[in-house]
Amino acid sequence: MADNVRFTLNDSQVEIVGIPPMTTLLDWLRDHRGLRGTKEGCAEGDCGACTVVLEREGRRDAVNSCIVLLGQLDGQSVRTVEGLRGVDGGPHPVQTAMAEADATQCGFCTPGFVMSAVAYASGGGTADPDAIHDALAGNLCRCTGYRPIVEAMTRIAGLAVEPPPAPLASPRTQSTTFEGVFFVPRSLEELLALRAAHPEARLLAGGTDLGLLASRERKPPEAVIHLLHVPELAAISATADKITIGAAATYTDAAPTLIEAFPALRPYLSRLGSRQIRNMGTIGGNIGTASPIGDMPSALLALEASLTLVSRRGARDVLLDDFFLDYRRTALAPDEIIQSLSMPRLWEGETFHCDKVSKRRDQDISTVAGAYRVRIRNGKIEDARLAFGGMAATPRRAPAAEAALLKDGFAAAIAAIGKDFKPLDDWRGSAAYRRQVAANLLRRLELRLAEPGRVLEVEAL
Ligand SMILES: Cc1cc2nc3c(=O)[nH]c(=O)nc-3n(C[C@H](O)[C@H](O)[C@H](O)COP(=O)(O)OP(=O)(O)OC[C@H]3O[C@@H](n4cnc5c(N)ncnc54)[C@H](O)[C@@H]3O)c2cc1C
Ligand code: FES
Ligand code: FES
Image (cartoon, rainbow, N blue to C red; front, top):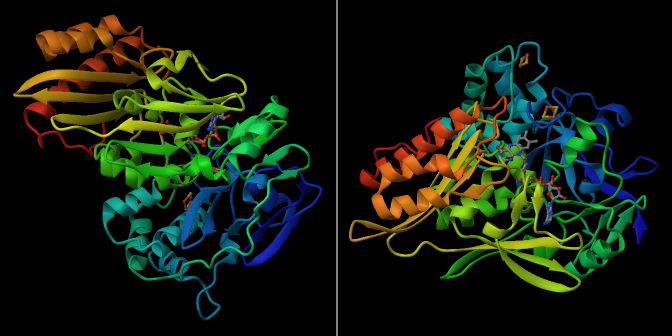
């Protein structure tokens, strides 16, 4: 069924006619609606100047409008800085707090900070400095400095500045197509039929990788199949044995289940992109993009994850160990889609840790990522899965270090790690630096296991 994109913008219904569905929300707001309060800084999801709020039932999510495509908004509700009001029709309490705390100077970044703050405060955000840091990590200011902005956030924390958003009006239940190029299936069956009929179309989940083609590169994909409305790809479940995450579940939706099962993922996930990126991005997208420096593959390799891949020919399970074949080349067949990923829970005696080393603490992809699942019985390491990102053309386990660890302990594993990898050598880090980092991370793991609590898990590396 062909149709036009329809969504709610600042409480009014809008219908997109005659504008390509691959247009970014930011371009449409500024160039077609004349709403220039939302700014363009980097056009690649990094600076937060373009932040708007997606009002979903019962919650508000900050997102980067520069990497959201219009077609992704169908049936959604968007609020921009122009749509903020206080109860008396005056400034919104967040805007008042920003003004009173002198938290703005040139003002370029301010609408983005305000929208992140609105999402934070209306989600029950507190004055906890770490939580404020987390909420603002995706917004950059080059002149005011962050102290007064944090002060403004502290003032509004705990104020219920907004009632929860109402349920969205009459969401679509049938699949639809915008302009013949933006396909939105509503079931796995429809998705697989579209996949078979349109092999040229790119799969689009949150768009935090693919959206850059439209924003930074100005060369949007010609056709996409959007995955986020397929219930079978969004399901999350936890049984006594394993955790299963739908490939199109966002990080924000998957995080509680993942962290409950694997607590070391809490600080790790808080450093994956920003709040805005995690509100849109998916783990399926992180695996599908197959970057050697993606954060999730190393963690999932250590956790012994397997993927369920589906096509019209049927479903098959593939160990993540066997999925990454070469630089950005995977075992996914052209007609297949990643439906979900599963990993066994930690058994008695097992422990899981992970580290991310990047040039900046926030909003930066890894230079090296390390993850380790270790089983210890009677003080002896019985089994170990050590996996690294940024050390080769694909995220990979370290078989020589694993074998050396079991046989002769950490010193041997650290010595062996050089045999496992021929690391990347680029502006993020030389090969020698990366080799040294991987060795240091194993030493860190040794300290963690020897003296639990000695190694701080949240510190910046
Ligand atoms: C500012 C910024 C910061 C970032 N920081 C980080 C970071 O710290 N760490 C990190 O790892 N990444 C980071 N990223 C990259 C990105 O956010 C992640 O890779 C994210 O998980 C991608 O998910 P997505 O749903 O947005 O994928 P999309 O952009 O929708 O898709 C990415 C790729 O995967 C394919 N794909 C998506 N879903 C499926 C599926 N179910 N089956 C098969 N193929 C599929 C798509 O076709 C596409 O090729 C960052 C990106 C930005 C813009
Ligand atoms: S313009 Fe910088 S994040 Fe969108
Ligand atoms: S006030 Fe100028 S960039 Fe933040």
